[in-house]
Image (tube, rainbow, N blue to C red; front, side, top):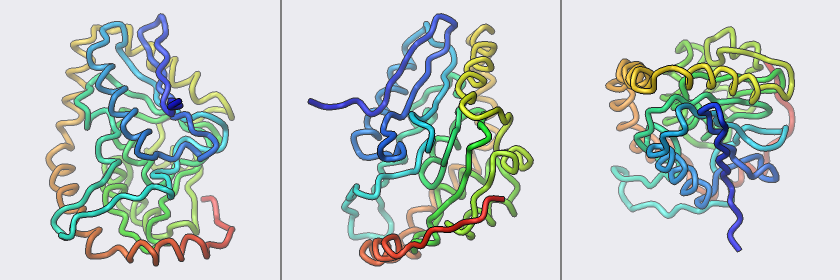
Length: 258
């Protein structure tokens, strides 16, 4: 029996809550979860009863911690081609222009930024922390850094990407830098995100989706060009998978929350 790792719960107010449901893996994305996310976004395109979406993660420890470390993705033998299972997990990658509000509690790191980068805005509770572990494990932060460069000042993105696992951004600091639009008490992020999404869902849908598309267009050209360079930068800068695994296995606990 296949266990669903993404749930979608429509509400009476025009809002659907989409939940990454792998709390035992900190809501990390494996190949099945990636496929389910893409399927959910595609389904929501045609569901006229849903006019806004809240995206969150199950449990209290994490929103999402990126790709599951157990996933193996064979790569083509060319630095000009790369298979990335996370490229298609976001709503915009699946042509969904209904507004998406992310509700974050606990950790959001690494590949989580593929999702956060395609949300309209982010609500976080006070337990939320944001960080990017790539450089610590010998990997280039390309897609993640590009997505976050659309939401945060360049210096803040550079610090997060380069500090790796040594430093995490608190919910309050994320609010101060513009990554997060609202900080709420622990456990209240989904409720706050639903309240905001319900307001948006009450407005004429064509105007709302047109506004979402216009906002995305404002950054789309730069984003598209930057993402097009990511595969080559990763191919050139990443250590071999066995070396990455060794760095991951040798990690030591301890980090500073800023």
